[in-house]
Every structure is written in structure tokens, then in C-alpha cells.
Length: 320
Length: 245
Image 1 (spheres, rainbow over the protein chains, first blue to last red):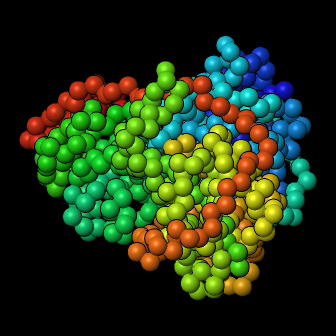
Image 2: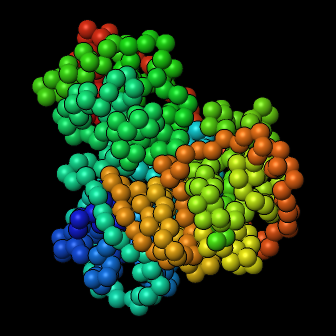
């Protein structure tokens, strides 16, 4: 009956968002009087598997079939569905991500599960099973009643702050039968920026818009991001102009992010942009136009020229 | 080749969201409904494939009669016919069931839709449809090219992209820059009026998730302005007051 948590790996390490999911899943297990089991798919060393225990998982199922080393939403759904069956799980928890999105939908179809995406609270069990989620691209919230026997909760980043203990989890190998059909999509190439902080995982984000005047000026944004150990992002016009890759575009039709700190440089703050970032904990706006609408949604603001302000901020961060 | 494009009817992206009936319903007063922006990309790519290969395009919407202007616009842009499943779209599973039922009757080579609707942002319907039909699903798709029954696809992943290959039939959740958005021309608008729009009743009534009520985010406190010539102060405040760095 355990709560099952899908803990996603990135280059053999449990992603930060998945650490949050494990901690969240362990809390749900406590609330429902059961235990938390993490399912980890792909190659990872012992210490990484043990990390799941430190965030609250009692058991870890480790699926290591070589065919699963390449992330594959369809095959991962088959593995997780088999784990659900073995564990008799009624609640499945995972962190939203590109891989998890592909997997979750297939899983919901297989299990005829009720699904809440972008979950931002622990469930309320006082009258059924209700969770709060972010909808209308962060412009509103919904209180969802999950009525199906099996429930899947895809949680948004920063829903919960994980606390680490020195508990350990018991690790078992998990070898479910895989379907040939799950490998019908073949991966021909992967292009991934390495060494950078992944934007959806980032706690701190420095973002810039057309106010930067051109891609050649991005150095000042990257310098501040580097000093802060932050990810970089951009507004839609900037990715439309190919100044920055689409994977950095945050907003209504781009990524929706919820970091602890979002610094917007030279972005006026159209409602579509705001929709993708308004669940950030702290918003800083730097713009030379004092009437930029973004200031109304900011916690801190500087009316000034980004070319003057950003290098000074970078210097101040380095001096901390 | 037969393409099914599934579209949503959603509030315009600039809409200020508000609720009525004790926060249980969207306040539709003054709201303009549009085709989901991601669905627009799916339709635009379908139209390009039609121009190239002579494919037929059917547009499908699960929605009530007030979705019809959105469906007619899709016909004006280049779809050949349309089906409306006459039901309030409740949750992703219910919508997927409707799409899968229509797809089983008509065996489409490609089922295209947006990566997610911009109201509930679930991004799940394409995957559930793929599972129900037992065919592969891929999302979010940035590029799609066909070579016979082989699809070559570029999918966005965190911090990059993936090149994929799969055989038709497929279900794809689309996003930019898969195609240029299309705007209907006058001829399209005129012919859209005569194109068939079939209304069918829903099959199955599986709603696994319902919304009890809605809420708006609490407004942020007043912005604290820092003079540009004291910009360094911001870093101190983020460190000591907001405690985020």
C-alpha cells in the first residue's frame, strides 16, 4: 500500500526536484499511515540510492535494465506501473519535468488514475482527497478532488522544502518485464548544454528581455547568473529573435518556473510573461522605464540602465 | 494521409482570470475565447503537410456550442472538416477518451494537438490518448518531418533538444517553432462556412478528477524601490532581508 515516488536521475544523481518529491511523498505516506517507496530507473551508485532514504523513503526499487539508461517516457511508465502493482500503491508522487510529463500521461492511461499536475500543496484528507494546483499558467489555483482509486500527483518545484535526515532506505533490485512497443521511438541525437544549471531545477534565475538590445550583450546577464549560481532565462521576443534558445523562454507559452528568486532585466512584464514566473518567491525587476508594468508585480525594483546596474550587482554578489 | 488536429477553446492569453458562483466557475463575462496557442502550432503544421502531401485534416474539439467560432476559424485556416464532441471538457482522462473513441473509428495517421491547454496546463491528454490507442506519443514537439511512414521529430528537453524517429501512427503534442502560425484569409473564412462540422455526443463518462473551487493568488506586497546609484543595496537586501541568496 506504500506511496510510490518516481525519483528521476540526471547523470546518475537524483534531481533536486525529485528530492522534493520524495520528501513530499514521505509526508503523504505519514498522513495516510503507510510507507514511502521510491522507484529509481537507470544507473546510479549506492550512495545516490541511499540519498532517497535521507529524504524519507523507506524502500527503494532500483530498475537497471540497460535499455532504460536512455530516458524513455513510455518504457518508464511500464516500469512504474509494474511497481505500482507490486506495491499496491494508491498514490504516486513525482516532480514535473520533461521526462516525467511524458511518463505520467502514459501511466495515467494505463492505471486509469486521477491526475493532478502542478500540485502546490500537501493533500487535504478531511473530506476525500483534495490537492491545490496551479492553473491558468499561474494566474489562479484549483482545489482538485481526486476521485479515482489510484491518484497521481505531479508536484511543482518549491511546493515543499525537503529536510534531510540520516535515515537509510532498503534498496532492492526491480526487474519488470518490458514491452517491445515501449521502444518504438528511437533517439537519434541529444543536444544538451552541459555544466549549466538547468532552468526548471534552478533556485535562482536571472532573466533578460529585449532591453539587452542584442545577443552579444548577454555576457552581463551570464556574469550575474554565474556569480549567483543561477540559471539564465529570457522573454518570448528574445527567443523568437533567436537571441537565446527556446529552452530558456519563460512565460505563458514557454517554461513555467517557480524559483526562490527571479531577477528580470530589461523585461517590461507583459501579462503573458508574468504568467510563467509569478509563482517565484521573490521577484526583482530592473528596467529603465519607471512605468514598466512589471514593477507592480515585483518585490524589489531598480529604475536604471541594465548595462550599468548588472555589472554592479555582479560585483556586489562576489563581495558577499 | 489523414491528420486529426485536436483543439481547445481557451481564454485569450491576456485575460485577467476571475471566478463567480462562490469561486466555482470561471467568470466568462468579457472574456475572448481563442484556439489554444499550442494547438494553433499543431494546426499550422498540419496545413503545411496538407499542402505538401495532400493530406486531409479533421479538427476535433471537446466542448459545448460556444466553441464553434474557434472550430470555424480552424476550418478557415485549412482544415477540411470538423467534429465537436458535445460535452463540457472535465478532466484530461475524459477528453482523452473522447479523442480516442473518434480516432478508433477513423484511423488517423497523425494525431496532433498542443503540448498543453493554457487553462489547466496539464499537458497530459496526448499521452493518455497514445496509451488508449496503443501508439507512441511524443511531446513537446518542436519540429516534425515525414518521410513515408517515418516521422523525424525534434523534441524539447530540459536545457536542450532530442532528435527522435518513429513510425506512424503517432500522437504528438506540439509547440513552437514547428510551423508559422496561420491567419485565415477571406477565401478561407468564406469556405469555412460551408465545410462540414459534425456534432457527436460523448462516449463514456469517466471523470476522475473534479475541481471543487478556484482561488486567485494573494497580491504581492508593495515593491521596494532601490535607487540605481545604490544598486549594491539590492544584493544586501536579498541576502539579509529576503534571505534568498
